[in-house]
Image 1: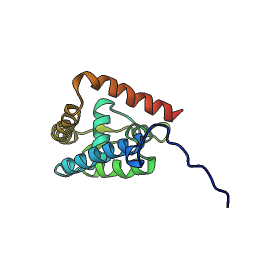
Image 2: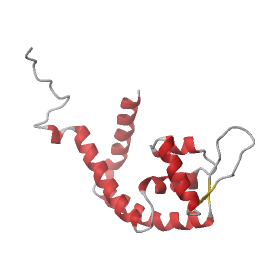
Image 3: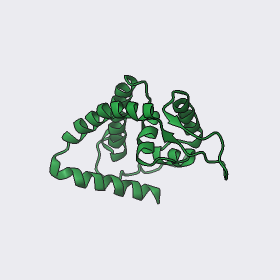
Image 4: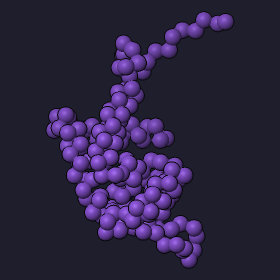
Length: 153
């Protein structure tokens, strides 16, 4: 077997726990855990909440568009949509005149539940953003956008 030289990390780090990707994943896991706990009290999952948030901002989106906007697969979004529809939180037409996409809209109950859940989720976001000095928040958000663009391309 051939001996290989160790690969150097792209920035100084004592071990994997100091890598940018690890720290980003740790922050994501903390956010997801806090949201899971808060949304459980409203009978929602994170993907269901995300779907309601997006539909409130952009009514009439299709399953595929919602999947892209909420970072889940189309198959997962099918399950999310069925659950939301069965709970009376969204409406979709039984059929459409052209194509297969059935646009979804929030029901009055969906809007009520979303509003209640937003209070919990926005409190989590406030806790999270208070941890970043105010003068650095805009730069952090720009950095997140640059990271996403670097990895999307």
